[in-house]
Amino acid sequence: MGGALAQARVTTPVPVSPRGMQVQQTDVAAGGGRTAVLMAGYVSPARRSRDWSLRARLGGVRDLGTPVRLASGFVSAPTVGVGADGTAVAAWTAGTVLRVAVARPGHNFGRVQTVSRARALGGVGVTASGRAVVTWRLGTGVQVAIAAPGRPFGASQTLGDSRQDVPAVTVAPNGTIVVAWLDTPSPPQPPPAPQGPLAPARILAATLATGAARFSSTAELATLSYWISGPGAASGPGGAAVTWRQTPIEQRLAPLGAGDTFQAFVPLAATGPPGNEDATFSDRLALAIPAGGTNVALWLETRSGTAVVKTSTRRAGGAFSTARTLSASGWLAWPPAAMALSDRALAAWTETRGRQSRVRLALHPVGRGWTALSPLPTRSLDALTLSVAASSRYAVITWIQDVGTSRTSLGGGRMYMTTYRPQA
Image 1 (tube, rainbow, N blue to C red):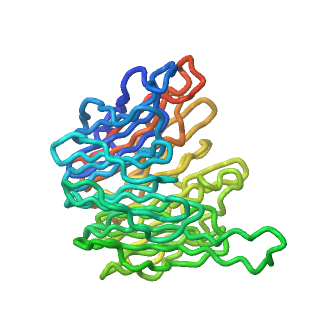
Image 2: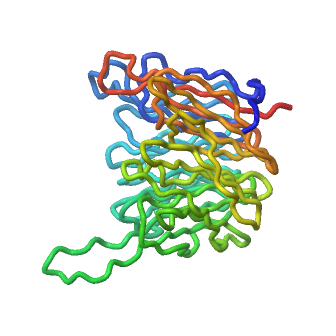
């Protein structure tokens, strides 16, 4: 990669979690000049249930507001989304109950709403008008609920079945909401039931157009005889797409085209088979779609005790380029993330070597190559807690570090944040 750019593009990492809070789960979102962060954890030492909480901060590009408590007690899968109008939606599960909180433009998070029972939370999508969708799985049913701008979430809709993974969700530039999921066959019945041939799994997707009250008919994107996890969904200024692993050595991408119909899939050949013990880490594809329809893909390739970040790019209508290594030699890389600004892609990932750890960023302007930004050193990094978000003009990266510095065996650390903005 090219030499490091001026660090004026990247702010100095700062802690954003309250002092004394041991954070275990995080998420971040950006849009409309607003940044929202979620942090779930406990006050050390945690002796009572009320020591656990979910907190949120909501502010501008660099400065976040005062932390507010959204929930007391232990929560799972905190997720946040921000629309281009500044609407922020936080979702989480408490036990088997799905709850949400909405922050209208110019306001903080309001009253918490209980939406449904839920087995596993999928994600949140917020359009430029403030319309929001939350997705989850209840039993085997893929569920969604819709909230009009400034209104509570309505009754749930069932889109299909998924026995293994949570649904993925994203919002296309035209405001269409995309939900994708994996439908695996029912497991074989125990004897004496007859054992027939195993049916294939299916990659399915549905869309919700601007102004529509219900999702479209389900589209089948692929059938699989091999699967580890469900599909991903990504969007950016240049469009939206669903991604999945078709075979042990091939990932695929289906772009959302005109009329909200999915185009023919595009293969990323030779992405490398996922490692046996790290399959869920290396199975997901990170995808950025800046303006112009360029696709920038990143993934983790693991083999023989090593792990590196690989990348490949594709211009609109073309094929993906030959894969190349993006991470540093001699370091162990962890799953990458990809963000799309209007005219560039930004990659983020963590690297460890012995007791050393750091956060890495790399920039890919449309039509040019990769440029590495200077590494951000960390202390006692939790390498799997990297969260990223981007609007058209800036990107936000968060992670958990200072892990294990307290006198508790429950884990957790401080949440840190840095922002990237192109120089004028």
